[in-house]
Structures are given as C-alpha cells and as structure tokens.
Image (cartoon, rainbow over all chains, first blue to last red; front, side, top):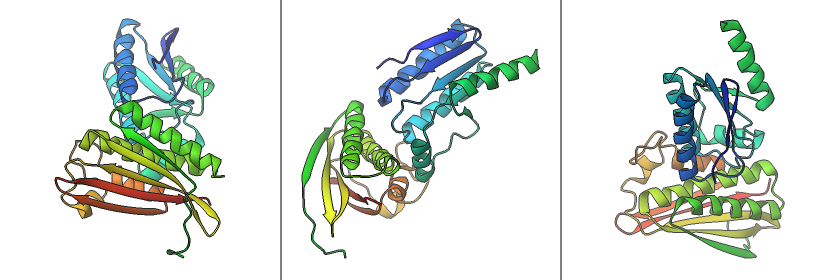
Amino acid sequence: MEVPILKQGEILIATVQAALTDSDLLQLRRALEEKVAKARARAIIIDLTAMDVMDSFASRTMREVAHMIRLRGAETVIVGIQPDVAFAMVQLGLSMGGVTTALDLEEGLEYLHRKFRTIL
Amino acid sequence: MENSLVVVENEICVSIAADQDVVAARQKGRAMALKLGFSAGDSTLLATAISELARNIVSYAGQGEIVLRATQNSGCPGVTVIARDEGPGIPSIEQALRDGYSTSGSLGLGLPGVRRLVDEFEITSEVGRGTTVTVRKWKA
C-alpha cells in the first residue's frame, strides 16, 4: 500500500489511506526522505487519520522520519491521530517525543503557514 | 470468578510469518471485539496489543500464530488472544516484563506495554522451545 505524497507549495503532504504494514512504513520513510530533498520542501505533513493502530514500530518510524527531516532543514507535522489510537499509544507507553502534531490536515497547514510567515 | 464457566463461541487462527500478517491479525481482533459489543476505544486497545504480540513473533521467532477466541465469563463477553511461537524463547521473563528491556534494538516497550492494554496477561516461555503469551480483554 503506497502512500501518495502531494506537493503543495513548499509543503509535502503524505496521506495514509489504510492500515500500513511495517514495510509500508519503511517505504513511506524512504519516499519522504527522498522527496523532501528533490522538492526542496520546507515542511512535510503526514496525515495518519486512516491509521488503525499506532504501535511501537509505527510510532518509532514516525519519530525517525521527523528527526531525519529536521536534519535536512525541514519540519514535520503529524496530523490526524485518532482519539482511540492516541489513548492506546499512551497506555502502551509511547510518545511522539518532540514531534509537532496537529488535530487534522487543516490545522497542520495553518500551523505551518503561520510559522513560515513569521520567519519571512 | 476466575473458574466460572467459559464458553467458546468462535475462534480464528491467524498464521504469523510476515508483517502483513501483523495487520491482518489486529484487524481480525478488532472486528471480533466490535462484534462482541466492545467500544471503539477498547477495540483499538486490543488491536494495538495484538499488533505488538504479532510483531514479537515476526521479530524474534520468524513465525507462529495468533489465536483469537470469543470468550464469555458470566455473560460478559471478552476476547482471548493466544500468541504462540516455537522461537528461541525468553531467558528471563521477569526482565522481559520490565519497561525498557529489549534484545532486538526496539524500544523494549512490547510486553509491559501490552500488559497495560489488556485485563489479563499470562506468559510462558522456554528457551529453545518457544513462547506463548495469552491476553484477555473483557467488554467494559
């Protein structure tokens, strides 16, 4: 299950469409790392609304993506983690440690637009 | 309460050998929980536990199986999950149940985390023979 990545201005938006396997997650990580350089993107948004479960592997992979993207000079915003999924993550002892999150795609875009405007 | 009548209604066995089986197992577990009247939240907790248990099988043993069993206790529905493998086994269960412990370079949140997601948790393991983790969650 490949995750489509769209470019909107300086932002890449990856929208997860269904539950991802571990290899899907790793493929998404590779695709984002590649595209962020190619597109000279300043930020990426990963929309996890359709993700049924965020277990230890999925959470760790998302944290790694965010860390990697930051080292490339861009920012990551994770959006759309569902309330039930978030609750299970807390119970499991997972956090998104230092990764910016927002309620949904709209809020994520708003956050980035606000932030880029301040920098400019 | 512990020894009261348990009626087996329905059982699904999912073979676990690759990462897509991890997703299949948790989705079947969630579907069973929802069918038994679990809330969406509790179904997600169970699905997350199954995901961790199934991944442990893939990472440590290579293959195994997850049995999902619809269970009843005095009219209260529940789901029993049995994660079984014939892998290397766990030398120290006590250590494996401690937060932060891992031998695979993961975060080591697996088993203690799973324990927090369910109502009942039991593990048996023998080095060289394999590991069986049984967890149970009741409808709230």
